[in-house]
Image 1 (cartoon, rainbow, N blue to C red):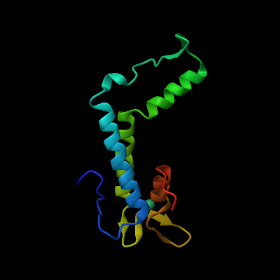
Image 2 (cartoon, helix red, strand yellow):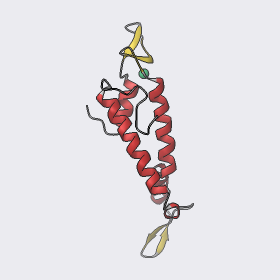
Image 3 (cartoon, helix red, strand yellow):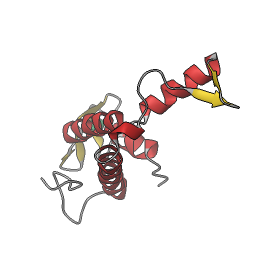
Length: 127
Ligand SMILES: [Zn+2]
């Protein structure tokens, strides 16, 4: 599969799913571009926050460090891979999600299911 290409592919793909595949592809591209030539630019433990040349270590700086680590290239790549796995599971099966059940209707949920739409919203989908 080509990077960013959905497994189902095709023109009938739901816009939220196309958006999500594009968001994943862009995140992977940016993460790779950020990590390959410049590994040393990323913080090693511990991250130092300086104020007027003095190291500052507070609960706020530790929270900021944790936030930075969530967005480091390898963390982004791991998250995208996990989400691609979720998308593969929650595939379009004849207009219904392959795994999600709608207990009230006693059938599978309409595709894209709330899980897929939730992932798309997490990346900025507003449809
Ligand atoms: Zn589903």
